[in-house]
Length: 149
Ligand SMILES: [Zn+2]
Image (cartoon, rainbow, N blue to C red; front, side):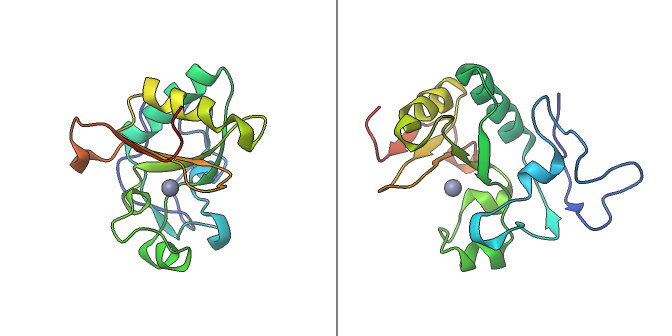
């Protein structure tokens, strides 16, 4: 299994490719092109194959396919949603994962992301999702912020 390794023009994704084309066991291209209040993350999107693999491992650990609140974000979208300056969403390496069954199950996602080798896991306030990323510049280190799970 491998995710796309180039920018994809979502308005012209290539012969035989549509928004509903499956890019991994559980997810389609369209599932990754979401970003909260932006609607779509951008016309041109990039998803890090390691993050796709990580997300599939999260689904395996949870035993179900979690929803994605935010995947790829263009720099403009990232600014509009108040994302971090160097947000991993802009490099396609981060997913905001909705806990199956509701917000009270956020720790299930935190633990699943740990199992899936995420480099950084974050929850904050009463957020309805868990941010998990597989960004390369964090190297092999692992850090977490927010809930103690
Ligand atoms: Zn995030």
